[in-house]
Amino acid sequence: MAEAETPAAPLQPVAPVRVYRHRLPARIWHWVNAVTLLILLMSGLMIFNAHPRLYWGEYGANFDRAWLAIGSTAETGYLRVGEWKIDTTGVLGRWTNSEGVEKTWAFPGWATIPTSYSLADGRRWHLFFAWVLAIGLTLYMLWTVVAGHLRKDLHVRRAEWSPRHIWHDIKDHARLRFPKGAAAARYNVLQKLSYIGVIFVLLPLMIATGLTMSPGFNAAAPWLLDLFGGRQSARSIHFIAAWLLVAFFLVHIVMVLLAGPVNEIRSMVTGWFRLPPEGKESA
Image 1 (tube, rainbow, N blue to C red):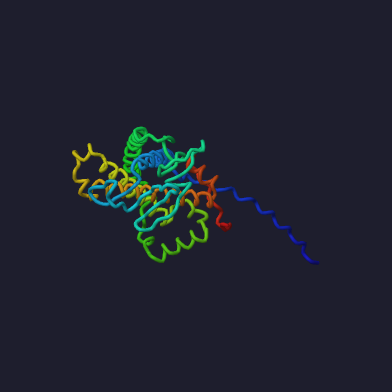
Image 2: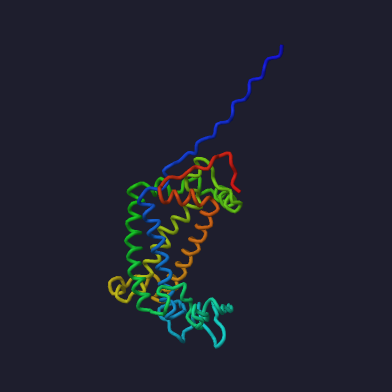
């Protein structure tokens, strides 16, 4: 007599695994920094509107040759970088405001703080939040060392420096293959390098070049002028570093959206991150 087959037990759903990914100081600094950098960018664009040209060296004036300029002719707006020049009418140099009035500032009012032209107010906003950035960055850098965040989360291990390992991570990012399981709770080598570059290179560079542009601070630390090759060179480096931060921000936002915005944002608000199951591939 044939044995009766035992019905298979139904598969039980696996409860999602949560890990405490972001500690409170990191979360506070993340959100304060996001607001601070946005205000610094917008107020910085207002300051740039006062003289929308960049130079290398000690000096820079209207009749000196600028390596970058945003300006306008009688009918068009333009962006010029070296000998390369493009028409930017309606976006940069010559644009129309919400009231239908044509303006010839470098950056439009919707991108600046304040929205109407005021160099003095732009400087007030910029200086206040520059202090917020400098103090917050100093405290965060100290915390990363004292609390072990640098050693535990940001330190690039010897094996991760392998060109093969880095190339593998680059290909995974290009194919939108995000880590699963326990690996999702750790930073990969590209994240580590980008975060280290922002925290320990770009942001300190922004602060140092900003101080170099201050005539009052030059008296206290004249060596900064020598370090950056003059106030105009410092202004150019400041501008370039600012747009590198914008590029980082845009890539960061795209990665958050692709990796799962609810889980990513929730982890940066509460600290708790839900690990993606290992058997499920990313789209």
